[in-house]
Image 1 (cartoon, rainbow, N blue to C red):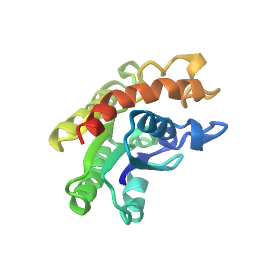
Image 2: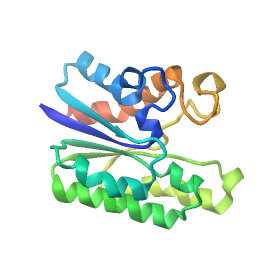
Image 3: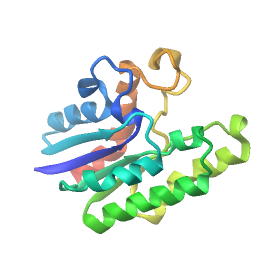
Length: 187
């Protein structure tokens, strides 16, 4: 059976959900895989609060098991901690390089994040460009913005207005599936 590794932070982990093992977007992707008759094993390697530096540090452990599809979602915690966009991009590229070196045939998917330029100015512009640039440079499938249709929608987020609720993850899974589904169905 082929293996999909979802690698990210609290957005991947399913922070704040009543049952992340059933309500996070990787869990909901698993439901879609079963419905489509696609045979994949999923690992949710999301860690709440993780940064690109932390993700890079823990990656070797997760690459100890076979990876056929690698789905990367990291970077938003870095920007919240004031890490410069060039450092975020360098760390993400290092993660991608490690995956490619260990599993050169793995399909790669980038889950992009965005921050409002009105709040962060030039830093936002730099940050928002990272995901598309890395996806293009590394031949990765790209979900331009993971929280499309969810960000800013109070009824789709937890009380913190940062993390999706169970209802929000139902929207997130459709956004991810629109890119991941066709990739997997091509074989």
